[in-house]
Amino acid sequence: MADNGILITFSGPSGSGKDTVLSKLVEKRNDAKISISMTTRKPRNGEIDGTHYYFVNREYFEKKIAADGMLEYAEYAGNLYGTPKEPVDEMLRAGKAVILEIEVQGAEKIRKLYPDVVSIFLMPPSVRVLEERLRGRNTEDEETINHRLVIAREEIRKASDYDYVVINDTIENAVARIETIIDAERLKTSRNKKIISEVINNV
Ligand code: 5GP
Image 1: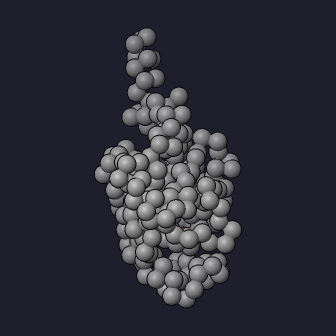
Image 2 (image 1 turned 90 degrees about the vertical axis):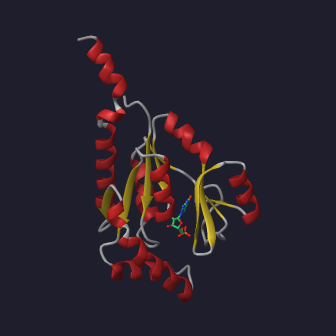
Image 3 (image 1 turned 30 degrees about the vertical axis):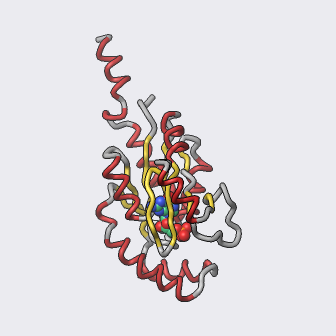
């Protein structure tokens, strides 16, 4: 078995299908877990506190930062988003592939803090498809959609900073590609030092 869990950052523009792809992935694989972020954004229709996010106010969020309880955090479209530290550490110790669904600034910060993090960018097949998905969601007003499209173009330009790019043409294809990444990462020598040295010692 691999020495430890795998920390994965998973980014992609709003509307690229991150939530759908990840929920299908964790349905299929018990060794993949999604970290639940904290945000000061208001819940959208159907979003559940403690499932999609921990929805908190800015004061609570700032206290958590001050107490060193966040792995990373970033401001995005006027709201704070961040990853609570403790549950991530616990899942990594249990050998899981822990996926942080975070925007590009957060992914950059994590890359600096944890050099062996695996970064994945979920790419829409085109900006036109992205726009259609954002509008089809029917949860945001025109101004918010336009703002998110501007941010999306900036994010897409950063895709080549990531270790892997996964095109989300169909959900099934995207999930299969992420599974391939997790499987390959688990086989890396750097993640299997213990078993390697055990075998070598018995040669
Ligand atoms: P949304 O409002 O669409 O749910 O999320 C907006 C952006 O914030 C998305 O790009 C999402 O990946 C990112 N995000 C969600 N949770 C976190 C987090 O814990 N940290 C950071 N840095 N970004 C996050």
